[in-house]
Structures are given as structure tokens and as C-alpha cells.
Image 1 (cartoon, chains in turn cyan, brown):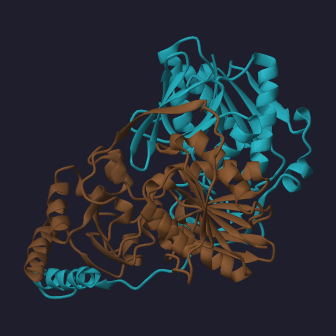
Image 2 (cartoon, rainbow over the protein chains, first blue to last red; image 1 turned 120 degrees about the vertical axis):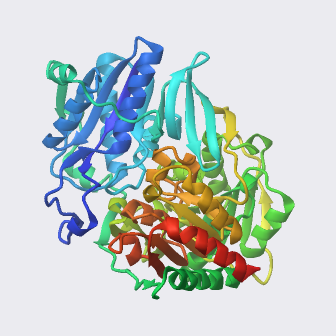
Image 3 (cartoon, helix red, strand yellow; image 1 turned 120 degrees about the horizontal axis):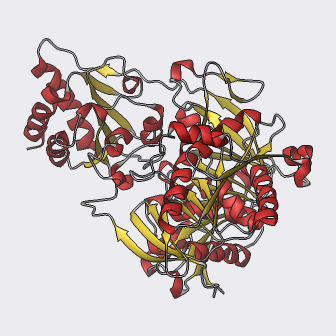
Length: 273
Length: 323
């Protein structure tokens, strides 16, 4: 079987709020001193794919990324986590967050990879990214490929003739039986925390194949991707300043201060009725 | 015509989220002089259908029995067919923020040749385009997107919108027989997490605990406080990731988006991803040892003190006040 994991490189989302700035011209965050990292849900997706390989055996895991040349680091790290092979579709300086365009590119790359190496039984995408976070790519990609999809999946395991999926909903866990090929978006749980690559695997990762392709190689036109396929654009982005004045409990003793707090809480609760 | 469609899942009934989504639809339709059509995916009880008809111009009901327990692939197909059975030329298709709606939205947009957006906290029309406001960069920024293709298919932070007012006369209810393919991904089992009381998203008062509690035991102390004021319990990502409380307690960007009348944050510093989940709370109170914690910039009142000293005393005083 073949499993594909799609990765996105983003600005480190853990950069503190005080160091976060918007570039008004680009309508995006300034890079500043922030590192570029693999989106966390994409790393959860890698881990989920590797655990599926360990459970099912005879599974080849491929990582795919649409990004600038710096995104090669994400793919190398994926291979150090023991992903078998990787492909980078080189982006031409486009920071547009539009999932409709990204979905087109990923679908074209998947078609190419499938021509060369056979169909992917499962395509895994992170549920959302830590930058724009619109959480649309998985759904768009499923439609581009004409495959069924399920969101918020936390594990894949060999099932009755297909693949068994476990996923999180707002009321609990759902278990699904899926006929390949399909697309899933991956969320995190305590079992798919990304593994730390071993030193030996980091060295081995440089011997694994990393294919680089351009949009032209996929028969796509960069301008058309930016303009024609795009379904939304950023009109405005700003750092909110809706900070409120917090009224801190005052008083000489703890008892007085807690009493103030209790009265305020009681007032709100009583008003609800 | 510039009509607006609102997709709701029949099995969920006309809950607070559906009320908010229809309310958002009514406001949007009013701004462009159009109608609001509610597209109901799956069977709903009569009372819920009547409640929807009371606030909508039209209800299109896809009550196929196979949709009673939601199968996501079939729900998507149903939404597409209900869209066609309605007026079919909606400027916007709005959805709520349950798991199914979240996964339907981008795929439905693709099938309808439209644009999609997620987790919108505010929407308005600007000419032919819908503008959707939401957070970006894990809550550090607010972004406004222009959706360039019609229809704009948007799932909303539904509980943040006012419910729709009742109309002078109820809308027509049109049943539609849907033609659904067997799903290629089929939900075969559901393990509903044990949940006492109401859903966190619908709770009027929430008491949440965070990393600063240091372990699972203090949540027992917080439970006493919660019980005293009739609150549900929530937690930050750090507390859930540490396994102190179940994952479905998590409030935040990747957890629940709550909108209570009162949110009490205890030993929670207020990371932007947490603020994103509780940002729609009407009143926020904070208990934290660190006066510089970001939570104090996002709360109405609070106390800079160790929760260990505050919570038992606070519980005692609140019991006396309400007694």
C-alpha cells in the first residue's frame, strides 16, 4: 500500500504575541526572528502514517510539500522520522493562503506521483495550519481528486478489507470503515505525538530520494494558480487591540479580595437566572 | 434574487448553534433584500421544523431515514441536492460549527463552484462578494477575507450570532426526497464521551483550569466551585495534553469554541490559542498568580493570587451568597 502525507511549512506559531507583527503591504505576518517549522498537525499526520505502516506492514509513506525551497527542511525532517520518500513542489514566491489554489497544485502533484509509483490508498492532510488556519485544504483536495474524505482523524489501522479510521467529533469518537483511495485530515491526540528522529535516521534521510518539481513540470501556470484558481483573498489583517481593563480585586486581606471576587461572580450568575 | 441558505443537521434540532446560523443568515439576507431558506439535512422532529419555519422564508427538508445518524459523505451529497432543490442561486450558504458542518463546507463550495471560509465570527456582503472575518495566526491577528466566487459557503462561529427573530408568517416547508449513494467511508461506531450536564458549547457558566494547577487533583476543587454556581468544567490545552482531564474539555483553537455568559479562567495564562476558544464569552474572570499573564488583558475582573488560597474560600463565599 501507499500512503501520502501533505506537509506545510509555516512561521513558528509559538512566537510570543509581543514579537508578532503584520506586514501591511503583504497582508501577512512579518517573518521577524521566527523560525520556519512544519505545521504541527502535519507532523501528527506523519506520525499517524508511520504508525499505520508499523501496524499494516508493506506500506510506503511519501511526503509531499508545496512550498518555497526552505520547505526542503520539512521534507528532510519527515524522512528522518522514517518517511520513505519525498517530493517538493516549488512555489514561486506566493504567500496566498487560498486553499483552492493549493488544492489544485497538490492534486496535480499527486496525479504525477501516482503515474510514477501507483495509487495512494490514503492521503493525509493536517486538519488546519498554525498560520492562516482556515482548515480547507483537505476538503478541497478530496474534491479535486474525486475521493471520499473524513475530517479530524486520529488513527488509521488495517480493517476488514479496508482501513479503519478513528476520528474526533465534538461529542466523542467515531469509528469508520473506509475503502481506499480516500483523503483524511489529521488531528492530534496523545498517541500521534511526532517522534523525535534518531541521529542515524537523520543521516540516512540524506540518502533518501527527494524529488523537486516546478509548477511547469506539473503542467500548471503560476499566474493562473495565483489568479484564476484563487477563490478568496485577504482583504485586511490586523492585530486586535480589544484589550479590556481588568478590575483586579483589592483589599488588605485575602478574605476581602476574595469577597469582592465572589460578589462579582455572584452578580453575573444571578443575572443569568 | 439574493437569497441566503442555511444548512442545518436535522438530528441536532434547532439548537443554539442553528439559531445563530439562521440569525446570521437573516441579517445577511436583510442587507441585500433576499430570503432565508433553511436546508435541513436528515430527519428532524416536528417541533424543530416548526421553529425553523417560524424564522425562515422557506424550509427545504431532506428527511431521508438513512441520514438519521449522520454519514458525512451522504450529508455532503444531501447538502448539494437540497441546495439545488431550494432556489439554487444563493449568494451565501451558511453552516454551523459542528464537526460535520466543518467538513462539509469546503467540499460543498467546491461542488457549487463557490468560495469557502471557516470559523467566521462576522460576515457581510460587499457588492457581489461576501466578506468574512475570523482569526489568523492562532488568534494573534484578525483577518477579513473577500470570497470571490459565488456562492460563499461559510461555517460560522454560530453561537456568537444572535438568534433569528420570528417572522410574521411561517415559511413553507418543502420535503425533498434525496437520492443518496452508499458512502465509501462509513461511520460504523460511535463512542459518545461521558458527559454530565449540558454541552460545554451551550453552558452559560464555565470554570476552566490550566497548566498552573499542576496536576489532575485540583480539578476536584474546581468542581466544587463549578457545582456551587451551576457551571460546567473546561480546561486549557496544556491540562488536556497532560492527561489531567479528558480531551473533550479543551477550550481553544483546536478545542471547543465556547460563548458562555461567564467564563472563569483559573491558573490559565491566556495563550492566544486559548483566548481564541473563549473569546466570545460575555464576562471573563481570572485567577492567576502572575499579574503579567495575558489573561488579565482579556478579562473583566480577576484576582492576582494562588488558586489554592482562593478557590476553597471563593466556593464557600459563593455558597453563602446563593444560599
